[in-house]
Length: 248
Image 1 (tube, rainbow, N blue to C red):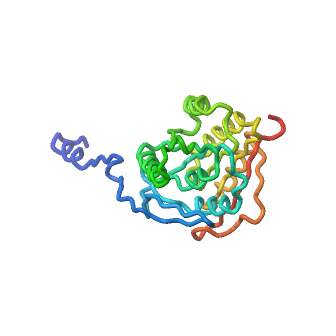
Image 2 (cartoon, rainbow, N blue to C red):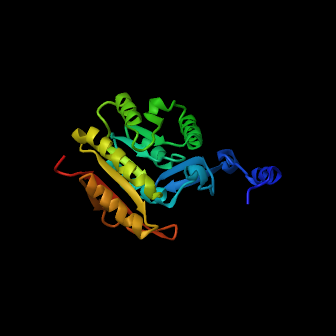
Image 3 (cartoon, helix red, strand yellow):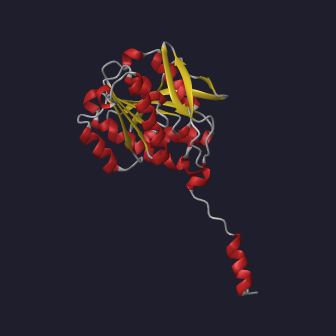
């Protein structure tokens, strides 16, 4: 039975179109975090919508795991250059900037980049310095986007010593592009013996297998850091060190 014009109009009226602004919450709270001897204050949410990929507005368990690990191993940061993937509000990059020579924080979401830059400014103001003078930068980076990766590498010649990621294996569809991006960054920093430090939080067995498969596809060596496996946010987390395999 075909819809009459009135029925069709009613059907059209029942359709509700929502854009990202409907889900957007920018009621950020200034929050204090402590990792070892390091105190960090930044703006973040206590919860965020998973719609439109706004998860970067809060601090995830994997970031707490990675920051705890880094705060106990600051010698691996001193004088180094680092790039962080999926920086969110910037809690890991800001911690690293206190020891690293240079830190580039990246995210693909424009709303997340706004709060990331706000926290960079907050951190810099507390030290009475500009972000660049502290070697702290923020860039948009969509995983797998070679143009954006090349732009970053052109602005920071020689690549990086460390690639960092905390709780960034969340969507299965994004994992291949994540490892594609990591491979390009590791290759650019191979002369520095660059390594990828991943704070991984296990949520599904499928994802557990997927990251191992993707690392193997890209001929990467993936090693669990002894003593780092523990419960974070009621889930099991672990630190992996990932490097290019010998075939590269």
